[in-house]
Image 1 (spheres, rainbow, N blue to C red):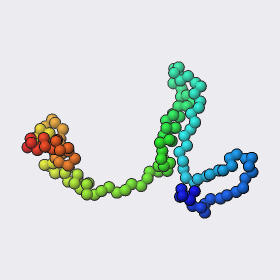
Image 2 (cartoon, helix red, strand yellow):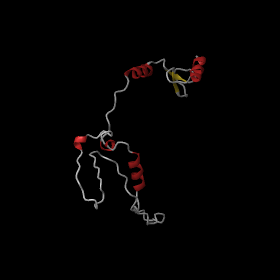
Image 3 (cartoon, helix red, strand yellow):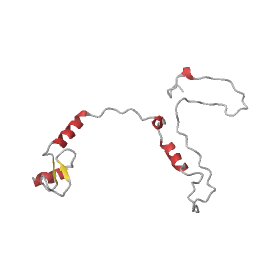
Image 4 (cartoon, one colour):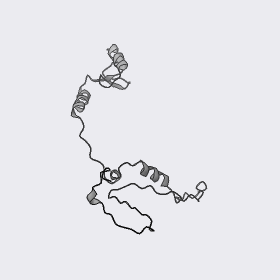
Length: 135
């Protein structure tokens, strides 16, 4: 257990009679997402004209969500975020404020029906060459 990162001071051993089940019980003090058992499928939900919720409504969704959760603390509160990189933010923000950086895909600077194109940056090379050839 020490290899798994469990502090040995937090463990406790007690003798138990051999005929009791379970012989070993591990308990952790951290939240865990436990999927519900969706075993009540006796009702025919295809013939439900009254639209009454059936006993297992949403059980499969809850089960699949519980299986996908890596850290159950995320369901209690969001994790802290790292600050974003200021270098890239400054480049994109400056480009969006520059009047020359946004122009239509046909080359016009105003009164164009085509969607705007941002110069340089994240455009693929072939697209960047096409834009610069139109200038």
